Each structure stands twice: as C-alpha cells, then as structure tokens.
Length: 103
Image (cartoon, rainbow, N blue to C red):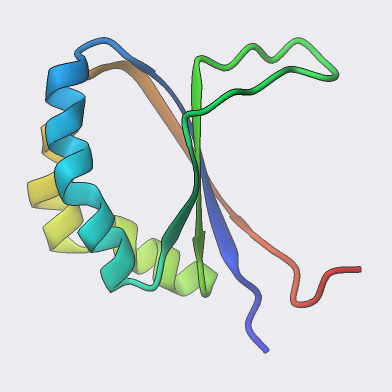
C-alpha cells in the first residue's frame, strides 16, 4: 500500500480578486492528479508554540509521487501557479509523506 502525501500551505492573501482567479483554476488540476482539499482557510487556533498562521490549506494526494507530479506539471507550473503572482504576500508550501496505515 502506498502512503498518502499532504501539501501543507500557509499564505497571506493580499489581493483577494487575483487569488480568486487562481482558485478558479487550481482545483481541477489538483483533482486531475488525484488530490483533494481537506482544509482551505477556515477557523484555526494555535494550541501550542508560537506559530500564528494567516491562512492554511491542506491537500491530500494518493502518493508523494502524485503530489510532486501535480506541482511540477506544466499545466500547474506554467498556467495556474502564475495566477497567484501578486495575490499573496507570502505562500509557503511543504510536501510531507503520510503513513501507510494510521497507528
């Protein structure tokens, strides 16, 4: 069994209209690679530590390889990702492999 993979994103949206253009296109590319949004904004609270995220998104993919393929695909990299340019003051993303089976 292949472990799922997760893209964890923290961002600060500085131009909501431009970001809406990005979000109008991104979900179809995410879905084409087997991905799904688990979190897209929403209420959050820091329970421990000093992290004070502005906005969080969490996406799940069937595998690390599929998540990498999504990110590196020409459709996302050359058409969709540039729609985000100027829409956020920062956009931090990390890819992490999940576990095969929950403990």
